[in-house]
Length: 304
Image 1 (spheres, rainbow, N blue to C red):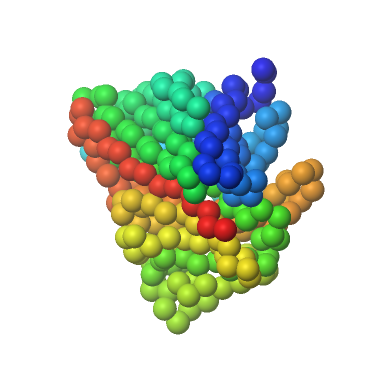
Image 2 (spheres, rainbow, N blue to C red):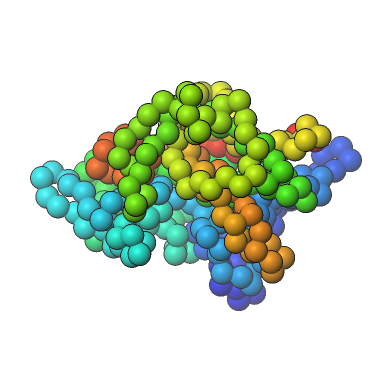
């Protein structure tokens, strides 16, 4: 089937009296749909649609933005392609327009791989993969990066799911973040400083109603073992859990996300191993030595 996002892969897992389903696209290894027991857990999109607002894509070898697409390596200026030209930034890595190949597949899991070759502003070689595996209460996502080049390479990992709790309007959900710091940004959304959230409007540790929140904000100090959660008034929730390496999270409220052909409020909760502009700040950045492999995981859970 010819689609704008390549081949589509449907996963199914049966458990007790319900089933879990996921849909993955070949392009950018995108998470296009996820449900447990008939409850939709992410804002999806149709197989014949373009990816809306980076929904579900893999963000490698960096998430979020790099200011001006510029950074330095061994004293030499590096210039990445400006993939967010309106703000003169390089955004969301190098694989968002890449078709992945299938490495392994079963009824309830799939592993997709894609290589990164030396290019403008990134003179390194990587072999990357992402494994989506349905579990009883949701989905586990495992990323692996191997440095196949000769020099140490800077890497970071992120994902871009828009969480959803069935048909509950997003504005009626309560947002809880396991984050203790917040990044103040400039008018191009690049970080200026990182401050503690305690006592500020950006403290979501105890939860706050989404309502009319307008966020495109990065947070840090994510506590290991805790989760980011959207909760309904009846106690049901959907949450993002992650390995300790995902010490950062970006939250983006989008009032015009297309759901069933109509604009609707959606909220992206994006686990990240490094914040925006990490190639310049070094925050959360990992340098993989030649031949080294790095594997980290995160996932989405539902409690009904």
